[in-house]
Amino acid sequence: MTADPVTIETDVLVIGSGAAGMYAAIEASRGGACVFLIDRSLIGRGGATVMAQMTVAVALGEEVPDAPRHHYDDTITAGRGLCDERLTQLLCEEAPACIRELDGWGVGWARKDNHITATTVPGHDRPRCVYVDFINTGPAVSKTLRTVMARNKDIRKAGDICVTDLVAGTDGAIAGAVGWHVGSGAPVTIAAKATVLATGGLTRIYRRNSASLNMGGDGYALALRAGASLIDMEFVQFFPIGHLAPRLVGMDPIMWDPFRYKLGGRLLNGRMEEFTSRYGSDEDGKYVLPRDLATYAIFKEVEAGCGSPHGGAYLSFEHCSAAALRAAFGPVIDRLAANNIDLTRMPVEVAPIAHYHMGGVIADAHMQTELAGLFAAGEVVGGANGANRLSGNAITEALVFGRCAGRSAAAYAKTIARRDLYQHDTHAALDFVNGGNGGRDLNTAAMVARLQAIMADEVGPFRTATKLERALLEIAALADELGELPPHHTGAAEPGFDLQRLEWFDLRNMLVVARAVTRSALARTESRGAHQREDCPQMLSAWRRHQRVRLIDGVLQVAGAPAEALVS
Ligand SMILES: Cc1cc2nc3c(=O)[nH]c(=O)nc-3n(C[C@H](O)[C@H](O)[C@H](O)COP(=O)(O)OP(=O)(O)OC[C@H]3O[C@@H](n4cnc5c(N)ncnc54)[C@H](O)[C@@H]3O)c2cc1C
Image 1: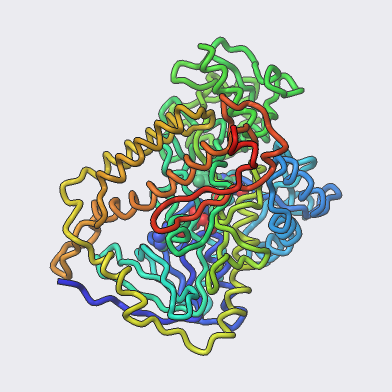
Image 2 (image 1 turned 180 degrees about the vertical axis):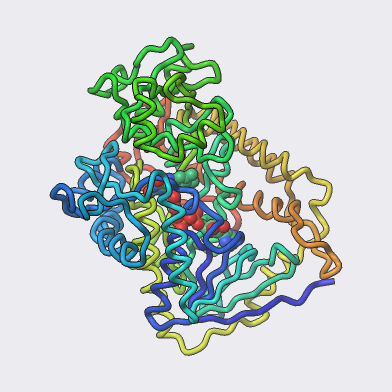
């Protein structure tokens, strides 16, 4: 039996309710559009934004002189020649307006002497990163945007809707999406004059990650299947000091960054020696390396047999007094104590963790993708940060790109009289959601874990052709095992929250995204930023170019390598 879909019509459909999606919804509504905002999780609580506890980069210049052009210069330098300069410019120039608007909405940026205060973080040439409370930035941003949306009747919202495909109308433009309601299993069709893709990143495809369960890269796969191109898929950022040991419950695994900004943590190898000066840091006793170099330094120490007991490095704040720690982090110290961690007496162990993705959907400076009717915003967009992202730029990107995408989508929607989705537009996607009868005997949870292990072991921060080729074979084997059709949805009699079915759809996307990352990494025969090839260690000027990934007739194609790389 095929269930009838729930059908919805709107001017602007926003998929994903992190900072990018919520700001897009608010701005599209200000542009006169009726908005429908959906998320596969709870609205405003499903992705990275609500988990991001630290800082937001913006050239406000309230405490020390600053200007967007300095922020731009630092972002371009970190991006190792690969930033899409139009997007970087948008990011840096529009950040102050977004941050001040959030301030007006009551987000609560930390202040000193009545000025919004900023902290210095590696890669920025001056204090530029604003924050809320001790480590409460993302939750505060998310709550503020949720509150603004709650006052707006033109924004309808629905959680628990997992989008499985974008759909094009008869004119070829994207005309909405098809998905299913996770709670009931019912298929859903949404017709929209304009669609904003704001589905966040992909780091769940790695074993050690800072992601939520909703960050398996759905948006990249949706865009690919709809015919859009992705760029820079090889550039996955690893956060160098993700928590490793001792066990830490109920806290963000990447929470050590604000500690070191404020207190100057010391990074030590397993022999309790400082080692960052051997990898380019010019300051002993204080860890200031940018993310890619710190990741490299820790991996190399571990490889040389100098790692900490669990395979990472020590991060020590033992030089700080209890009073200094409490002054800097107040209630966070109590949460650490509940985990039996006393930083005045012990170091913690840290190791690189997959954290952010620089690549993604191609969009112009209006957030228009290559496909008419489709806009993109936030982490799902590729290019603004090039080969390596500066700390704090990701929330800024979500806010700025979200606002811009909402504005563009509303303007585009006004040019369209009516948007219908006919049965012939949606039937393939709907048939798919209703499912065949495959997949029920699969252990999808074990398959997700296998994929994560492959990506961590073969497509981690340090890569070789041999490892990448092995990964491609293993990913292909997993894809064969997954099969072509999801487990059957049998209609209303079926209990909701069918997690095996959800994992099947997750794997469908995770596998194509994993393949895009791996294929791009194999093709890029140099090392640059977050992409380090141990068999091609040099950064080569011929490779100062983007690679594009497309899905053509179901086959993934990577293009953009320089002619000399194709010959060798
Ligand atoms: C633990 C952590 C800490 C971080 N700290 C910082 C920081 O301090 N500073 C900084 O600048 N950056 C930080 N980042 C990065 C930053 O938070 C993200 O890049 C940014 O918040 C992404 O925002 P977004 O709106 O694009 O996506 P997200 O906030 O991830 O939201 C995407 C939403 O899309 C939904 N979604 C996904 N797929 C589908 C689908 N198929 N159908 C429907 N909905 C879907 C998800 O459920 C989710 O709610 C951190 C990230 C993490 C994980």
